[in-house]
Length: 431
Image (cartoon, rainbow, N blue to C red):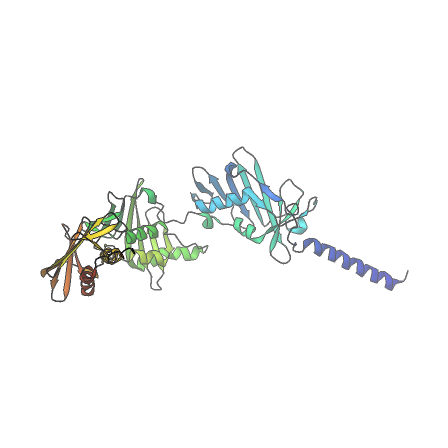
């Protein structure tokens, strides 16, 4: 045989072999049917009791499900419940991108002889499922996978691989104050103390009994509930946090009390406007978010209720304005508003009601001064207004707090009351 032809044939055979190997390892096309993309794992989620993650070059991470998920190794810590429930759900029904081969005898070419990562799922009934993840496919959009004891070779998405490729730091409970917001009874921010009233709304208890802006108080609770440590895998950076906390400027100290007891968090701000937190619920100093820092950097007036009336979306049955010697009294009668027995245009009275509903102070004062100017009544609520020079002071009847009003608002209320007109009589019927 011609040696040249022999060499050419060998080269062609080598090329075909390479092409075949490459085709077996190349990125799969989307499956045409569910049969092309069978499930890698199917486990009843309520059976999953233990998950072990082994990554090449790292200590195994062991997670155990009791009343809640906990990290059992390499450290013992509470786990992030949401993250763990998501991981368990992913493992319960783990989908593939494609079944590459259902009878593989050598997994080494796919990085599965010494897997990059192994996930062992332990069940309540004692059974275990071991998932191995190997090399990425050539395009990098999928990875090879197999279940121990099976000959099937799968490709799974890189997002699936990333969802499982977690360290203990990724999976720890990152909440700085793990309290139960539904059973919260007290919140303290420095010298300010909040409690719930009979309507289950927040009120200020200290430094004195005051009406609270319920939205502002709930926003503080939300920020404390959402307070989390920022994750870092740099142990050197973590080691610097105590010194940075000690040198940082105090921002605020908050305490929360639920059915389990009281927890405290202290937040400080560094020179670079980075925030550090120390929590009584955890050991150590942690880096945290500016949102938490901003939430704690507030004073008493930020939480006081500046609205003078509390009837909200409830419609009062009487509205009265007394100002500059004039009295305007409107009474609800069925669907009509009446004044002196006459039916008043409902739209004009509604404008007055809306203005009283939105009556808001510009700031607070230590005491009221000046001569009486006006009284506003809506249902059972009454507001008394005094004037001294250009300043308008207001109080809710039988309450000590003093509010400062915008003079323009005071004029608008009088004008709306005076502008309310009688309803025009219906047109006479034609004979």
